[in-house]
Structures are given as C-alpha cells and as structure tokens.
Length: 303
Image (cartoon, rainbow, N blue to C red; front, side, top):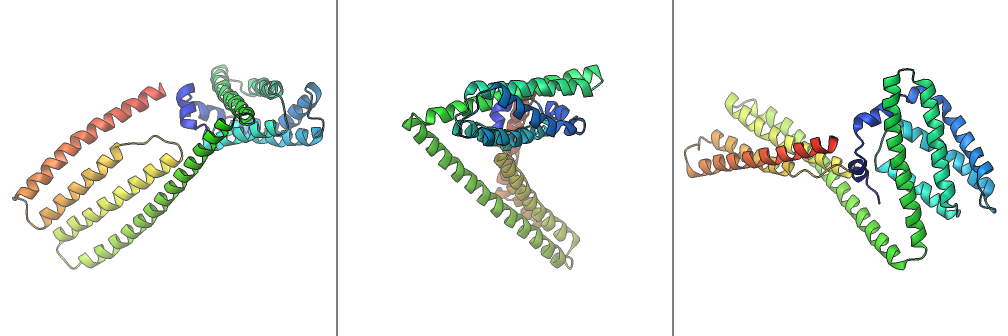
C-alpha cells in the first residue's frame, strides 16, 4: 500500500499546487469524453492489445481514463487516488498488458492534457505554474502505476512477497477497523458529553453564578478534549501525521479541570493544589516544546 502522505513528502507537492490544477477543472471538463476516446483509439492503433480480450480492454480503458482525467483535475491527492491507480495496475496485469503500453498511454495522456491546458489558460504566469504542478502530479501517477504494476508481476513468482503483502494487508485492514471503532466511540462520547453539559447547565441555573460558571467551564473542557481527539483520529485515518501534542494537551486540560474543581471547593491552599499547579506548568512547557517541533516539521515539509 502506497500512502499519499509518503508520496507528498517524496515529491514535495503542496496543497497550493493541487489547488492550481483543480482551478482549471471548469475549463477542462468539456474535454473529458474526447480525451478518453482518443486515448483508447491511440492504444488500439499503436499497441498490441490482448488478443482474446482486445475489445473489452479498449472499452475498459475508455472508462478508466475518463475517471483518471477527472481525478487529475480534481486535485485530490489522497489514498483514494492512490488506490485507483493501484486498481488500474491490477487491471493491466490481469489482461497481460505490457509495461511499454502502460507507460506509453500515460505519456500520451501527459502530452494531450498539457496541450489543452496550454490552449485554455491565456495568462503566461498562471499557465506555467499550472503546468509545473500538473507534471509533478503526472510524475506521481506514473511512479505509483509503475511500482504497483511490477509488484503484481512479482506476486506471480514470489511466494514470500505474496505472504508479506498478505500480512501487511491484514494488518492495515485491522488497523483501519480499530480506527473506525475509536472514531465511533469518540462520536458517542462527544454527543453524550454535550447532552450532559446541557442538563448540568440547566440544573445549575438555580445555584450561584460562580458555581455554575466553573462547573460549566469544566464540562466544556471535556467536550473540547473529545472534539480534539476525534479530529486527530479522523486526520490519522485520512493519512495525516500522528501528533503527540494532542495527548499532552489532553493531560494539560485534565489538570486545568482539576484546578477548577479545587477552586470551586475553596481548597486552594493545600498541597494538592500546589501539585496541580506544578503539573500544569510542566505540561505547559512540554506542550509548547512539542508543538514548536511539530510546526517546524510542517514548515520544512512545505518548503
């Protein structure tokens, strides 16, 4: 499995570059059917098609390249796009399409789309920027398709390679399943905490304003922690980076809530209070250091 976050790192492609490609989708949409028809005709006229399935392969290529064309100009480089390219490679190996044809069709696609972008974007500076981004995306496309193609070829002759891929695939599926369970639990906990917050606020209206404010703030902190954990888990499923700072932040919020409870109970002069204050200070410093490191890492990856 090729993950888009690794590809982004290797090719240093930025969100702004993908946005540039997607910005011309309205101009390029009209060429989708024409592109798919011409490339399927090009494949039939210039390469030796599988003898027993030539018509089926040609028709499938038309559908595949329609989808590829749309995905390219949507500018969404994610695991869904990588999986699409891997399935395209599987299609080629299933019908014994040779690598020369696979590379030739992608090269033809690059030249064909380059020409249409050149014709439809009048501004020289914008056109150059879009074309540079487009060619970078096509390099990524060719990389994934080629590597996946050869992986499928190797699988036919190497039992060890098949076993390794089987183990990795099972592990990835199990990991994804566990992430889905975590997201489901976090959604349930967040909804429940929000509901209890509403009940507690209504019940505390009859008490003092100070008591209601501190208790409500503590409940809000719990909801904030759950929302942050849910957001982090979703980003991990989408292929984002794992952030240690969020868990340090959870611990920090927990101690802040304890301090609010101690304040509410007017227990601000005992040893426990000083321990909580010291913990908040230490965790705050650790959180700041980790957050700075993570931000600097993101800046370096975007350069």
